Amino acid sequence: MSSGFTGSCLCGAVKLESTVTPVLTAHCHCIDCRKSSGSGHCTHMMVPEQAFSVSGDVAFFSRAADSGNIVSRGFCPACGSPLYSTNAGMPGMVFPRASCLDDPEIAKPAIAVYASRAPSWDHIDPALPAVAEMPQGDPQQVIAEKAAN
Image (cartoon, rainbow, N blue to C red; front, side, top):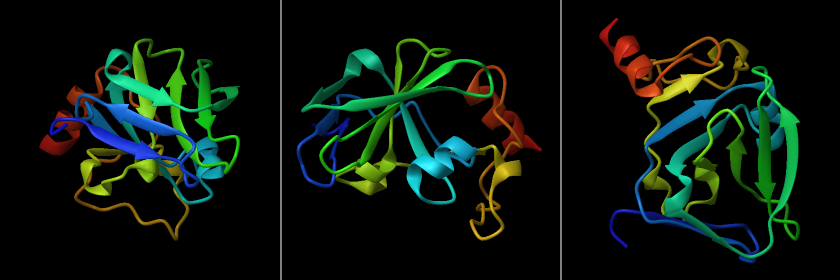
């Protein structure tokens, strides 16, 4: 599987697989991502739902995001590892966490979102385009515009 990726939870009860590389990878510093990751940010990859599969039981916690869209965060019920999320505002896409990758080099962050909420001790790479909140519109276009400035 040269173009996709695999991952798992800490105990190995849940395995993830994508047949494609991520469409986009982003660091998110929003409060929910910080709290659900136990860190200063969470690194999410975006892949089409039809290219993504999961084996094993996954539990979900759902909560409204700033946008009002429901974000459902999946985690292993045995070890608690955060695995992936879905966002009602982005149907057809799944957001695996880079922390569960078998090969962490697959994740190539292209943007930092909610940079205004990053704690001072979680430094954002100055070479990475960053936006204060969640960008509106096509993420790829936002990245291109930020990179051009």
